[in-house]
Image (cartoon, rainbow, N blue to C red):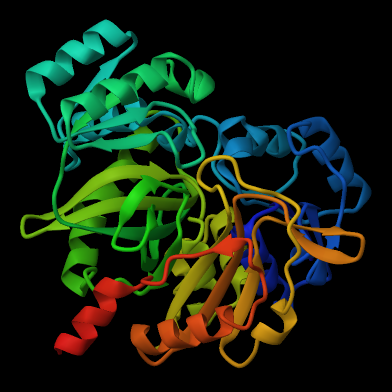
Length: 425
């Protein structure tokens, strides 16, 4: 098969690494890719926002499958435009991608189909939003309705923080994404990421993970796109997985089909787990980043076979096997992230850091004058496996410490909840 992978981050490097291992693969192209992806695929200069250009490339290179990594092109309808040209694509339609593209749409779907989630309100102006906050009180959660690269969510512990978050949304800090806001009750519990491979009818569980959103150790500081993750998530017991499928995933699949937008692709549920069971925080309609990195390290089966089964509507006849090991990834970020990151600093020692049970996925890198340099906020994902999360953690940090990048930083406590559980048992 000839495959085209769209995207340029750590998630896409992990997907490229796994797809490249498939015996089904003839040629892998990636657009625009990054230097790490370039080791697995031929990089092509394609504007992924130009759907006609992507379709023309697919015809020229006889592409058998397009794999869409990031959410932006999906919400913009690239899957629809490629399918209209009879090009096979893994990823949801524009209508189905509303599950990520509009938080308000997802909350309304939950209300309609009795899917457990936080109580909420939707607002299109700052005055009514602030009135709701004053009435409800803090802590409270403020979310930009649209796509904001993982940064449009504020967990406001005080009314002052909530007002400031609303001002940021309505004053344009997140562009069009903040023109409408969703305000939610503050939920307590343990967060988990739950993934399903979907073909429009069948949803097949595709692993669990736990992400670390805040920038600083001890879960402090502002939210980011994710500073690290591990898999599997201990809180997602077999009973919790069964409840999540029954109470959240299956009603969503039925609801989307009834709305004329059957969901096919990866459905990523961000969950809050408490003693009352799972509640949906939000949906994403693609692999998580950095959760994808740990899932790909643990996936035993051929990813390309699974993606084809989803595209062809064959998941009812498919199973997925996982390695027994845990996997953990640590994000190395550029100074300034999650604000404005400093670009251009030289990174050395990446090749020396990789080894048995360790993969270094590139997220925001470039080549400048023959040197590897930082070219984004989240720059490298140091990913390792181990018999336990603690072992994977130790291996990942040992590898990370072999990388020579004075201008980078990371959290030093990725996996702390799981490691504490392991020590307690």
